[in-house]
Amino acid sequence: MAKHDKKEIGISAILNPVPVVMVSCAGKDITSEEGRPNIITIAWAGTINSEPPMVSISVRKSRLSHKLISQTGEFVINLVNKGLAKSCDYCGVKSGRDEDKFSACGLTAVKAKGLEYAYAISEAPVSISCKVKSVSELGSHDMFIAEVVAVTADSYLMDENGKLCLDKAKLVAYNHGEYFLLGEKIGFFGYSLASDDIFEKRMGYSRKERDKYKHIREQKPKNGKKY
Picture 1: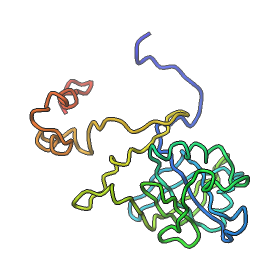
Picture 2: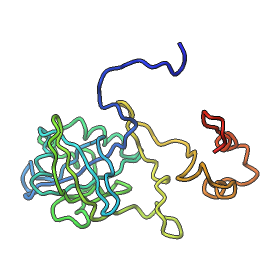
Picture 3: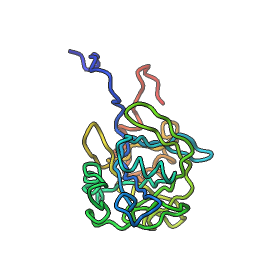
């Protein structure tokens, strides 16, 4: 059988890999068991607009977080690094109706920037504060479409010029039921057309290291033309 022979595998939401994130939220009454700050792990999250910056998350109606987000119209997307991976998985298995997941995971709830009710995870490298603009009922899940109102990041992710360097965060991706650390950087937006000098600078290579990336630069499309 040839490598690219195709076989139907059934209909499913197979798009992978996807970001795995810890979405935090809270009710209007945080003194109640169901209103306290809560965390839900979500793999179905994405960017949907740039101006204004908007994102979406999809949540089952049965989840406590669905109730809290619907009540307040707020949530926080917390990016997941290697140090949060175990807590991330735990928060996807356990229910906030049964326990305080912040406490169970030893995480710190802090009021989210720009929001009235929701809390962020202090230990997350990046936290994205979101206000719900609309909700679409899709079937098994409801999709919350929200505008980003604030973003906070750990200071170690900034370079000397104040640029955010997310590669330093060692973020985690979700691929068909399994967690993976992001791996080797092989390029950047526009690298297929970049000069060798620009490529070397952006990739952090020196001229002496050209053999390390020669195979990347010399890749050819099927039509045989060089990029």
